[in-house]
Length: 198
Length: 167
Image 1: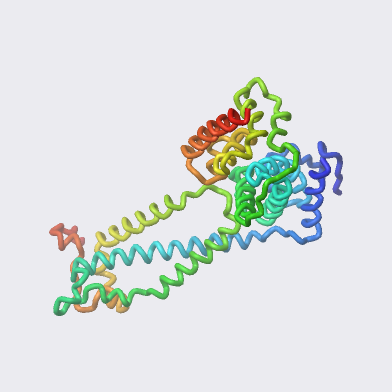
Image 2: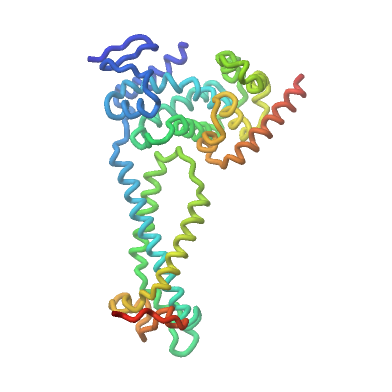
């Protein structure tokens, strides 16, 4: 009945998850087979890790955040309105989880070397199209930790996760104008810190 | 890569073992219904209260109880506060239930509060302008809320507007 192949071709009842958009996949998980949640994890694990890391700046804590996010999202999957954007929903959960961790005072200076923020830079194929973004991404990996949290989170979503102003507004629950202001101010701060570091 | 698989395995194991379960749909539906019914009750109650306050102000002024024979706002003591409290509680419980999963979409809290208050005041004024007190004062319990001493003409007549003649 159930056939599983490699990551590129996970099939259940002959259905290939990869072809489904997020919202349809969620409907499938809810109504047909929870096993398809693997695909949701595969799609979002790395993105959420990058985002959570951008907030908590610690790999271990970021992993906890992502795990809690994925578990919480699964628990509440029936409460998700499939007419909306799944990515905004799950990023919002991640945001709340990350903020909870920060509030719990778990945050400490990290010594680990894995460059979660710089990784996106390597995987992005549209370098020519997004030259400015790339430049900022390069800068980010090194000086990102010195930027205030409120700028860090919008910059992570905008530059690393390629979210639009509207989506960022939805995730962080703030008006688009504020998103724009924070991105611009964050960019300036990044440059200033970068210049100092040089 | 190993870390990726670890996380997938950990989460999927919890799901497969039943340690993590999807919350039933009814939970979300119930939360929404409770919040909806509660909010409707609260909005209606507040609008009615606005109308009553406007009515009492028109009749006796807010401190009318200081004037001989006046009742001021005292008849409002008969307002169904218990029922109103019940709707408030229902809203609160609904919000609690809904809040646990509705952590995602953008909501402007102040926008909602402002819109709600405006709606309540406008609805209260509308009810007041409609002159419903004439009919409602005929209902025994409601008569106490309005103040039993006399039947008061409805606002359009007070302000000199003529009501259309009944056919």
